[in-house]
Length: 574
Image 1: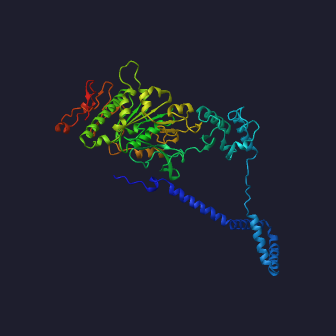
Image 2: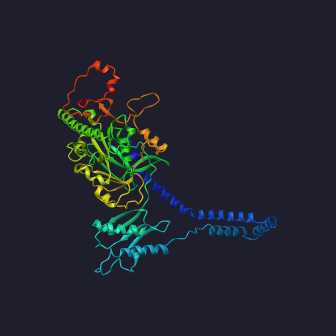
Image 3: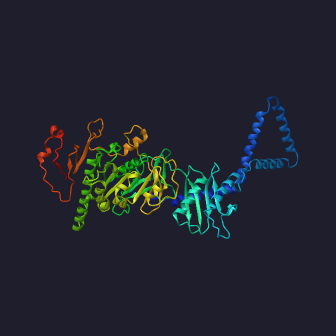
């Protein structure tokens, strides 16, 4: 089906919307200034009418008659005297203007509690922003804090929500350690439990501290408006990226700033590394990536934990294998390495001959590994492990259109090998972690303080040498888990492709546990996985044997299928 072009509002940004909003806001402010007297009089008349109605309701019934007669006599007297109606109208308008005036007090400065907080912050910064050799120090004990704090804002609880600090030019703001000490101090003095962002202006010697709102967690797995080769990892702050995506949540459809990861032959970050402790949302992120990858490619899933978190992908169209055991996982990775070599050789031959690249080589192959450290071989075993098998897909994956995505815990990242850490230039850190752990994975620390209580899927992302972005992964739980809500289960199941075979008309049935899907050309055969089964990968020098028509048409013997796999049998796929 042909893809519809993106609307101009999504492809050219939101400049026109911003300009329209500014024009509308300016027109509304001008109209408010012009009609301000009329608004004040209307509000005053409404308040006077309400006061008169309440006064009349509070008057006893036996006194309402004389009161009404007295009011009527006053009206008659005013109507008979010269200029009486005009004077009465002026009096009523004056009373309405006085009653309807804006009585909100104009705040000209901080109150006593806010002044005490600013004074405390100023005194705490004195040891870091002052030296004994400074003849006129900006920061000194008992000094004027108004000269150092050029801007400040407070929230409803009286805590600082924004602070602009001017510091001396001799402060070593180019050293990460000096910055970290100031940020830690301001974080502790301004109140814990919130997330702060620090923007350093080294040229102007200014530091702006602001409190960030929590990223929304209401977004779930859905079809995102992206092009082939683009994967949405999650969503971030509005001012952090220049692109927004239409999303659906509990409140309806809206535009959200998305963190888009680009893969393909021209990508500078073709592989992704996700770090986080159990329960931080790394598996949910890999499921979200798998659902998006199945739109335009094929995937291989290797689950080291063996808990069946990816059982919903078994037997689906585009899913080549879902492996949980060490033997099957290593065989699958060995096949992926040989497939990468085959793609390189076939693409090179096609280019040398001047022919177009075959279609099967242009279809991306995604290798998703969750907790590969659990598949480590014992020392001295002699067989290649996960880091060795991933060297070819990582080094040549961009040219062969092969993408590798790994999710691992912080404690086992060093065991992945130098090749994995070097070629996974797209990094994501999820869950509650320290600033040191974030810097160890991303290469640099974020400009924000890590949250004390991070929800699942909350973390940071960085592409290459770019900026560190806050990230909230869309909720993509296991649809077969009993703890998953019905709405999220339906959202994930609607994104999964159809199964390759249907067992009965009542609906598809998942493949039984302990089976391995072996792909040969277009057809897939489910064979029981044996510990001694050997999977021979398809290489570039594989010999194509002719297919016997009678053998294909012959029925399959049930006893032959149930028989165990011979240890010396070699499975060769076209």
